Image (cartoon, rainbow, N blue to C red; front, side):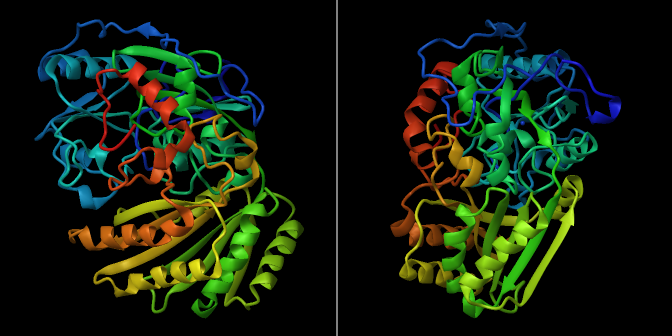
Length: 518
């Protein structure tokens, strides 16, 4: 792989020779052979044993004490009392700030990963995997109250955060934050489609699928992955692609974090960076039902250059509940005007606010990022598999408004993120993400004060999901994982059995086992 000028390579070095990602990191949310065309199978299911090269730490050798592990790695091993321990042990969600893992290994390369896994095998120490630290369930904390995860060795890939653009590809470490990925790509005139939260590690986001603000024109982030490097539980390093370890590669493109291995890098194809029009349309709450009805008929079927999200939010941050549609457009501005104006007309309601700004790709991604901060949050999800009836829309609106009735609720409600477009161009079994014909992903959220009992807010979001079950069933999105969802087929549907088989082959002893996961 030829290297572009140094301005295209940022942060810490990439894994030497690494060319991909894999299945580890955080749930949250990325060169090899050319990818197959959209819609064609990534690989046929096989019963072959994954291939790869064994590291020096595999095969029953490796460290057997904490001191030996510290001496064996070039990264950093932290334990309680170490300098930087308190900052390293917490996730982005303060509800898990009581996390008390046995240790945190911030790996510097694949050898460090293999050494950490060898130590875990030799000492029967549980393992938790972390990249960006946005795990909804807190599993990557490695031992926080209420997570059903024992005190563990956290293997953190946060320091594997290099971003290297080469031609029409970008190779990234799983710990690279989206803000840095976008900035480096923009400097090189290239782009990928991914999420908007700037502090999310691209590893976890991509592993679970990667629904983002350009998803209808670029596809899922996982759809853009062409190669993955991972270390499996036995310490073996795998360079995977559609033609090399195809089952592991398939599992990496939406099968969820922490399923078959520890990700150390991934390569994604890029596109020329387009100008991006950002738009926001705010409606009065009295029009909520009409807006939902118009949005679900418009957004998933609009020109693929257009993506939007519909949010119904309430709580103490809002004097009255709010209805907001925000979105992106990657074509000529006139096309966006026609499409959005048509949606507004179909809703039959005059917006209270309607703004649009055309920016460069880099500036647009930076503006969408806003000012991130750690907030205590509860969340779960559905998949909008069908359009809602008028009665079901009324339930959605009432449940969103009900956030105001929950004591201590700062902000709660629902966000519907449009699918369709390029997402629907891929077959439902071509990757683990099966919801290719769905209209939208649905995220129910509740934000509350740090230190508050999370139980009432968990009840709110899970009650919202339950209320929408008659319309959307049990389907959910892997990156919005919820410990109360005990059947992994809710995330992976027809792909669950294949994913389970691959996980059993790659991790027969359950080193990466997580509650209610594959």
